[in-house]
Length: 637
Image (cartoon, rainbow, N blue to C red):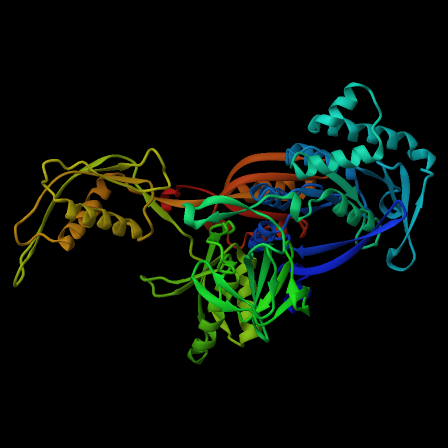
């Protein structure tokens, strides 16, 4: 993508397929690897969610200088959500201040997953040459153009002998904590063989109890091959990971899928992409095989679709294939579906759980500059929404503005830029609108009578009860009927409930959603001819709005958990920035940089990235995610 090259960041995840030939004891084995590269920026978090949902293992890349950063913690949470085993790779070993052991310690402390280095570096920073493999106790260096040739020697540099022994012992101790076999050998004071250590690392990694840490420099092409060998050694193949589907014929009971080609087909469409040739749908095959020209059923729509063309992706190049087997990732053309749909061959009533889609945190009002561009604009918006579930669009009923919502400033900026480049539509964007909420702070009783007489039957409804804060769940609304003696017939109770839901959609104060409200109906009255569903719906809405004034109604604003990382010398500047914007929750000062966590009002965070860059000479970075709603400042109420 041209935009990615310009900005120097990953925006869309790219899938590729590779064969890796691994030599062991003179025997060469070929491993097929399906690889997805995901963005590191929090704004494109859905790309990471999608990839985690369909992959069996992951390589977590850390920086040798910064170690665990705020985004690493987010990605770690996503891996835990989908139970993805991981190996860790400490990159940028040739940078000044590189310290891989600090990264290992941070994985243990911050991510709370046992980790130990299985390599130590030979030289550091500019002098970085290669690594010492602690399992086999040998030195590995890269030679030749782009580090293609690997030189393995049994001689470990003398100055590293002691460190290698110490770190090997640490590795064995860490494994003894998480693996029973290693624990027994450790207690009996036996020295495990290289094979036993490898088997223990594989068991503990697949069991999500441990992550081995490797190191190297991707830019300098050093120590990348041992990392690929580790992927083959320690990450699971499709048979090692239980993948479950839900059986719709048995009330969505979980069923384990087996990655055999001979079984009926089950696959998940996890990503859509527009292409000059039409819509490209990425599918992970969990069971069975997929042949060109066969028919599949979409379990969400129950529609039968033909698969005219199957391709293997090599980032933006395609390779046509006639058949794809279980455990692989492919892309198909000409299939109309949504992200997260399950496909079967019609023999099984299975569906798969979709991925987690986080809520949008930021909105912008948008409109095309020229009215003649309206068609292209709506076409682009439909495409973007199909491709990216975190990009949402709605028309605000009050202001009649078109509002786009997404995961942050950069996310929306990229889509506005894509509109201009791909669809030639120039847009005007307005100040993003914050999703405020309204709530009540105390109990308020109501006794409301709606009586209206017009020509013909009138409207008559009386509702009595109270509204109060919902103590059980401050994010949810709750309606309860305690009417006895049939004073309000059951058929009107549902109209009252609907009226309560309707009035909560548009609060009485600012017209934002009401949350954390509980309405209890205790009594009421009806009229023989004038009472109707409409009358009770309206009476409930009016009663709620009237009682809301005396129930201490207040506006809530979204508070964002903001994590800022910057060099330590800018701590004072950032404290000044944050004191105006929110409350500081936690500060952690490292050797050369510090991390601050604060809860900030979203309203105060617009344009914050510019202020932060100015205050830190462009060296500071921050990430935001929704934390909770809290009462807004008095001047906003």
